Length: 270
Image (cartoon, rainbow, N blue to C red; front, side, top):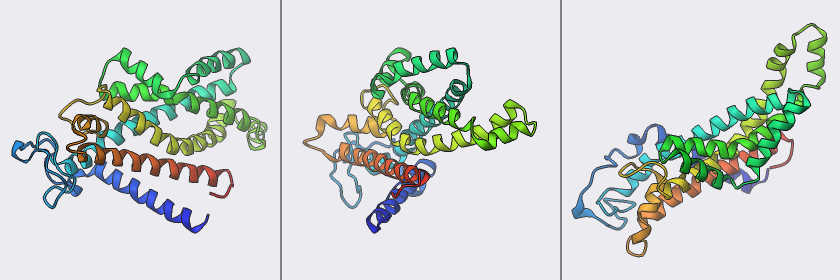
C-alpha cells in the first residue's frame, strides 16, 4: 500500500469514527436540540453561532446533521446486517442443497439481481408503505442477492475443502462440520462485502428518504434534510449541502475501507 492510500485509509477510518460517534453519542458533538425552532433565526448563513447555518424554521443545521447520523447510519447498518444474515442462510442452503433446490433458489435470486438495487428498494417501500422500518426492509431485499450469490459460491468451495473432509473422516457429523468449518469461512467473506455494502445501503436509504418514503419531519435524517432544502437551494444552499456532504463522505469512507479490506483478504495490494 503506497503512502497516498495509507493517508486515504486513515481519513476513511476517521470519517467513519466520527459518524459512529455522532450516531451513538450525538450530544457529545452537538448538545443543542435538533428539533428546537426559532423563526427569528431562520435561514441564517454559516457563521460563528451556527457553523452550518439554520434552516427555514431556524433549526441549527449542524445539530441536525450530527443527530441525523443515528437514523441514516442506523437504517443502513440494519439493512446491511439483515442482508448479510439472510444471504448467509439462503446462500449456504443453496450451496449445499440438491441441484433442484439450488436451481430454484438461484433463479429467484437472479431475478432480483436483474433489477437495479434502488428500484427494488423503491418498489418494496411503495408496497409496504413509507417509514424507516420499511425502508430498511426494502434496502435489505435490494442488497441481499449479492450476499446470497457469494455465500453460495463460498459454501460450494469450503464444503469440499480438505479440512472439512478430514473432519468428516474423523467422525464429525455433517451438520456439525458445516457449522464449525464452513459457516465461519463464508461469514468472513460476507463481512468484508458488508463493509462495502454499508455505503450503498446508506445511500439507498438516504435516496428513499429524499423521496419522502423514510422518516418524516421534523426528524433529523440526512436524506430528508437534503430534500427539505432543495426548494431554497439558491437562497440557502447550506441546508442541503451539509447533509449531502455527510452522506458523500460516509459512503466514500465505507466503500474505500471495504475495498481495502477485500484487497487484503484476497492477498492483493490495496
